Amino acid sequence: MDKKQKAEDDANRCARRLDLANRLVSSLGAEKERWSQAILRIGNEIEVVTGDVLLSAAFVSYVGPFNKKFRDIILVDKFQDFFKKNAIPCSPDSNPIKILTTEAEIAQWNNDKLPTDRVSIENGAILSNSERYSLMIDPQLQGIVWIKNKEAKNDLRVTRLDNKNMVKTLSNAVEAGQPVLIENLENSIDAVIQPVYSRAIIKKGKSRFIKMGDSDLALHKDFNLYLHTKLSNPHYPPEIQAECTLINFTVTEAGLEDQILNLVVKKERPDLAKQKEEIIQQQNSFKITLRDLEKDLLKRLAEQTGDILEDIELIENLEKSKALTTEI
Image 1 (cartoon, helix red, strand yellow):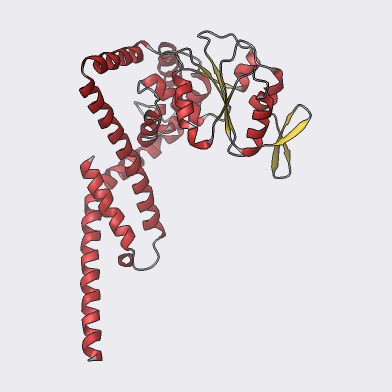
Image 2 (cartoon, helix red, strand yellow):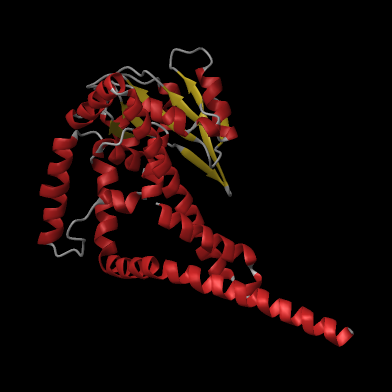
């Protein structure tokens, strides 16, 4: 009876492993084509990554204050022309947005109410990748809406220069690692916050401090500062432009056309407008979920040490990824 039971257990275990092996092969086979294309694409990109990253760094550093017309002149007529003349390896259709962000990240920004036009996506990429704190030129208040939605989960603190508790709010946030939004700036910025926006950091051992008034504030790694003005053509002194990343969120003509069209459709055909909104939200959530699944799968496959058929969660995630890819 013991031998019979052992034989039955072995048979059941083998049948289960065979089923898992078939599921694993089927799931990996479905992903093979997509991952093979990704390997080829990444192999080609490695050849020109130096120039693409240099172009993206220049894009973040210099084009923020300008409108679309001047951004195109700087990017195409100046930067890319310079790269060609100096034989710097670079993609023929080099696009800084592809280097600076991903489809899933853009989808999340759109969910947080960032407009979908090209300039707005560029602004999001510049703000997210800049080492300096951002100063948004935002007369139509599109950038500030996005920041409030984007940072809501991080306990965003919103204040103004004329708020009597502004310094206290900023000081607490620096040490607690909360993002701060100082809105409605005029042409001058109070000197008391200059050490913060200029990142005048003092290093003591492994700790970093910012001197604000008479206090040395321990700088938390998660702290972030957003400056905002409603002025359409502000005149800041050169040192502010050097110490902050100016980003022009002024609505473009194409962006305005899209928004007016959306308003008309919402009024005339609210059913279509609702359906479009739901489809966009669904597609954005698909992109984000697919990215998270792919990262988890590749991490598990890379770290797998024992028998891969014992990792049922990995196989189930592969099947989920396959189903989701087909659905998308």
